[in-house]
Amino acid sequence: MTEAVCVPCSEGTGVLTEEMIAEGLAGLDGWARRGETIYKRYEFKGFAKATQMANLVAWHSDKMGHHADISFGWGYCEVVYTSHEAGGLTENDFLCAMRLEALLA
Amino acid sequence: MTEAVCVPCSEGTGVLTEEMIAEGLAGLDGWARRGETIYKRYEFKGFAKATQMANLVAWHSDKMGHHADISFGWGYCEVVYTSHEAGGLTENDFLCAMRLEALLA
Amino acid sequence: MTEAVCVPCSEGTGVLTEEMIAEGLAGLDGWARRGETIYKRYEFKGFAKATQMANLVAWHSDKMGHHADISFGWGYCEVVYTSHEAGGLTENDFLCAMRLEALLA
Amino acid sequence: MTEAVCVPCSEGTGVLTEEMIAEGLAGLDGWARRGETIYKRYEFKGFAKATQMANLVAWHSDKMGHHADISFGWGYCEVVYTSHEAGGLTENDFLCAMRLEALLA
Image: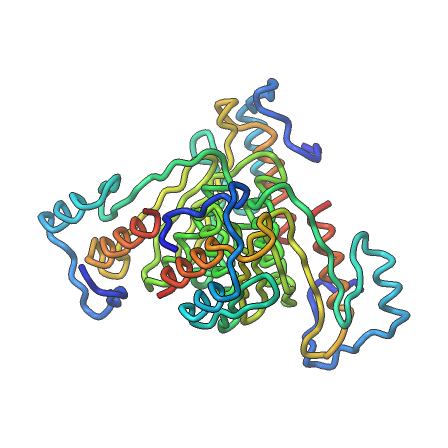
């Protein structure tokens, strides 16, 4: 999980095993699994900070070439990663989550 | 449903009856019900337009004083209205949906 | 100035005369001229509202097919219209300003 | 210039000398001086990427507690730093520029 940019899913990026997913989540504070995705809910005071977080994740998605699903509203922004084209979780999802955490640190 | 600005939910805005909800939805193209919310999924080509739509709804939420729950990602932006404080759907939700549709027309 | 969408500048949209510019500005509250542009400075409390305004104008620019130049920072957002390709002010600029004002009303 | 967060300007942050400014700019690729500010113009293809950059800088401004002046439009986003309250350039401005560059790397 050290690539600088996400590997295109269509070129055969592999779906992770349960063991690899567990290992990945162990290194990500506040992230959890939901089906074939990983997600984290960030909480904020009010609406403006949540909107700004959504825009940060949008920017980060384009930068990484791997796009999150983002939900936000009053007091929260939830970020979800999955590899739609691969049909499951791949290293790209964990790479993006790690990088996003680094931005926020 | 003609108020210019949303009525604060905490000041007694009433939860709508089933009949009123059905009537409200009948006038909103593409909106549907899900539990105690109404929502619409807007589809886009790519990511940038979906992000822009999310920001439009964020702006509109502050303008109306009634905040949507917004989800977006590659190719879509979903907007959800409910009146959290009233514990159900109120006229505010339908007013916001109508105004948003007017912006997009 | 009643078109629903801006006319592409490259297809011969005409540069307005001084008289037409003066007339257009007379109908736009708070807008003024600066060289071959018209602009308005909107003031806000803090940073978040200014950012949201910038995003509104960005959305509006794409909707209209005519893109503003936008500046924002703590407490302000300035919107500038000109028709770069026409080399001056055209009806598109006034149409966009009018529509933006209508959104904010 | 190693602080994690900007020092509030009102608490006596010092205006930099000409020598310090020149030294700071020497370490910032593409940044230049304009009066009591430093700025950089980032170029993009189209409008959406420029808008996204503006939102990134807005997020970064809040994170740093030091707010840029941001201009964007078709094909560009310009970022300007100055310390309004200090009446000139301070270490905060260079710190923010360096951090922004790191985000984009």
